[in-house]
Amino acid sequence: MKWIYELIVGIYALSIIGYFIDFIQHNRRANRMAFWLLTTVWLLQTFFLFSMALLDNRFPILTIYDGLYFYTWILITFSLIINRLFRVDFFVFFTNVLGFFLMMMYIFSKSQNQYAGNPIDLVSEMLITHITMAMVSYGFFALSFIFSFMYLLQYRLLKKKKWTIRLKRLGNLEQLERYSFFSILLGVPTLLIAIILGIIWGYSSSEPFAWFDTKTLGSFIVLLVYVMILFLKVARGLHGRNLVNLKVYAFLFLLVNYFLFSTLSNFHF
Image (cartoon, rainbow, N blue to C red):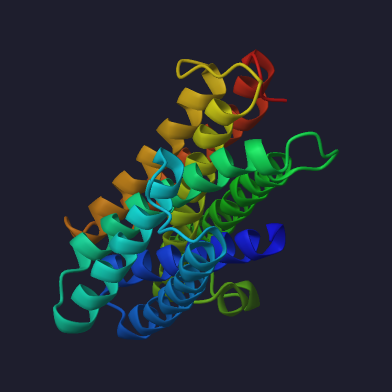
């Protein structure tokens, strides 16, 4: 059963990323992809819901943890219906973030009882997933930094009117800015999912967890900084060198968070 839960989490996470892209860019292709991924999650959840009802000869809502599973199923059902009938991107995205959080709460609580004592239990594997998702998001932000650096280099060459072969090989400014923006668009929901996994793991494991730990606060600040960059781009229409400079500064803070704050943290490496 463990790999099935991991599959559900993976598909659910991809669905949230798709809905986030659609929320920011009004991307119908991303919306359709996210919808069918979420439908897959719903089908798997429905199968397990009725399987538990048949095996236990009762509807699985009598305990607080079973209630979390059923509540998540209800949220996903409402989300699919609303996504199909209406165009309410804000509601659909945040409903699925809440649903993902509750789903992870259920999985972690279930794993403590069902998989306790195993050398590599579900909680440990979810910790690995948390770290992996965080590193992947850092990878996306690194790509954004590289594209931003290339943008600034190209801008400098154009400013000085140095018409060399490097100018063509760097790519045009509009393309570099678009790639940089898209990298952040993928990085933000990935980091959000990683933080959700980290918080739930912190409360479910025997390890001490502190909201005011330097690395925890640093991760929240990194997320807020990149969300602010998306806000300035989408809502305020900021673009060009000023926005690119912000992306560079944001990545420099990310490096501070990763290398410095990790050494000051009580439970991060």
